[in-house]
Length: 124
Image (cartoon, rainbow, N blue to C red; front, top):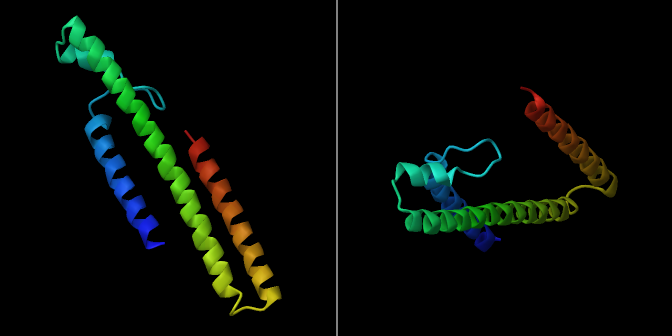
């Protein structure tokens, strides 16, 4: 479990670093691809440099997207493992009825939290 936490933390640092170096420099629409043409223009690249530069930056942009997805999947897996571990430990403390009630309460809590998250994202 500790190894997963360390790897997740390292991946988070890597992604944050990449975002710092790439996020503020490129003008891009929300959810869109960075404008590497503009950056090539600002750097006054030759045609040969521009082509190589854009190809490299697009490749790195795709790798960063993949890293984000991997981090999301790892996070889901870690949370699921934590949830299962907690329920296993609680089964030693709670009765079967109490455990069922607890799981029901947690399910309702997650549903409310998800609804709130969706409501907050849909507001202008």
